[in-house]
Image (cartoon, rainbow, N blue to C red; front, side, top):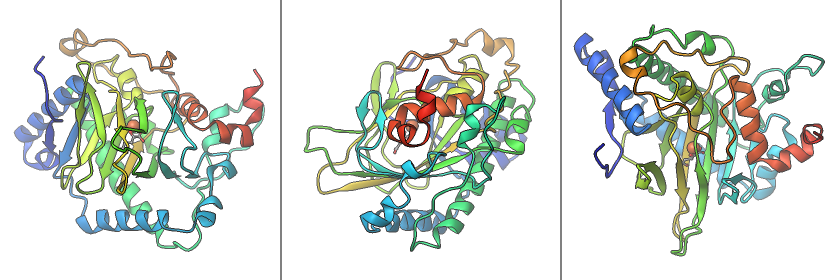
Length: 338
Ligand SMILES: O=C(O)CCC(=O)C(=O)O
Ligand SMILES: [Fe+2]
């Protein structure tokens, strides 16, 4: 396999440029997600004004007084929504130098009871900060747009592997569980690099990441080396999560990545959007055609050596528990008993 200096770039608009171009796009998408598991997506059609509005509201959020942010801290949310203070998150056994707000779909809480799976604890309301009423509308439009692109990408991937295009539709139809994180990495590297977020694979299906213009820091593992993935104007970084690796028996790759803190005196905002299916969905095992099946690598195990779980909600809860022990202590102490 060739070495690589930067992630491949794909133009999403090729998907609507006639059947031949669409087929070629789907094949390129499949090959990039098999080889690297990461790419830059250009031509996605999300208006620049919407992107600017998202970045601007994100900055305004982080500029809120500390007590306003702490009023929506995730320790108040059994659903792990809301604000994570600096140093309040662990990845790969180390502290992440980032603050963030997690926003999902506002839904009713699922009442606990016999036979009700633990992962239903993740369903419930968001925590919205005081003084930023415009945040909801922008986030909701962002979530809608990015969900639509993600579903198109999943359809393209399914078709490219010889499976029906609608293979994934049902898992996302009724109660999809996307999560948007709005993240700020303060300047901690001096210049000795500090952990912005530690090395990990994403636990969901597909991630679309927007990074502030001109910011670097993201690194992607390829053939045992870290490739820098700086922001490229007009693109999202798109990567495969563990559930899609599971669905393709490892043909598509959930790739390790991490973020190095920016240099002191600077910071970096990024918006990872995790496109996830309903909590009780099991990823359909894709009918990958034999040509590809023979090249499937089987599944990776995550750095903690725990295998990927079949039901999405179990995976999601496991990730949350590992990353936010303080929320578990405050809201889910019963899960720690055995
Ligand atoms: O901020 C970034 O560039 C990536 C963040 C990330 O990988 C994550 O939150 O899962
Ligand atoms: Fe990630």
